[in-house]
Length: 245
Image (cartoon, rainbow, N blue to C red; front, side, top):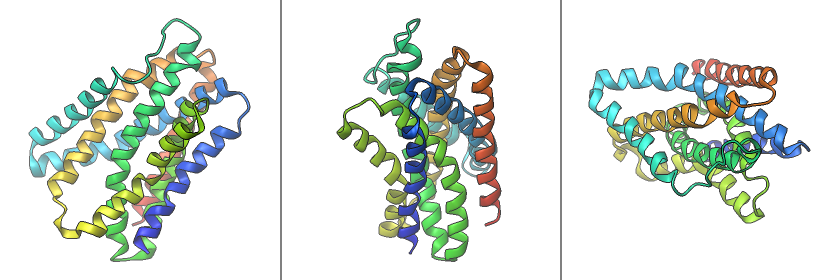
């Protein structure tokens, strides 16, 4: 049942993608998706990942935290050379290549984060299935805005490309569950800690290098702020659900 729960978590990513896909105005939904993702990522960092990193630093040392976070940043810096390059100053910078650029980067961060979340949900399911479902609901809620931003960037791509990117995002939690199912206690705790800290680096790069500049150049800043707050609320609510476990 634990694997089934982690598999069903992908539905939340697909739900976010569906919400983005139903909108007729592609440019507007791209702006909305990025604003929601900005609120969600900043809150996820402040409420969840950074406090975890502080605990990891006390347990395993700051070298692990800083090194893994820098690795996350350097991974996206390296991949930045291969991702579609935004054409700043042109209309495409708001609605074209930059959205695809952000979408792919967000997918990489989402996969890294959800691998750890999937491992946690599967591990908890062996103790209490009901508690694992509550945790999964919390994880799933903040996957909805991620699904929105992932789809917003690939909506104009070839169907095969859309399916591939969405499949990576949606199945990442299930893959984390599979890792725990296959390896169990053999999973090194320090590796999990390093992945958490690497995710922080990935998200920091996306937030400051991609999302904030995009929202800052939005033509509808008031609307963007509203959806940033919606992203914040989504993660706060998901955190409340996770806190019930």
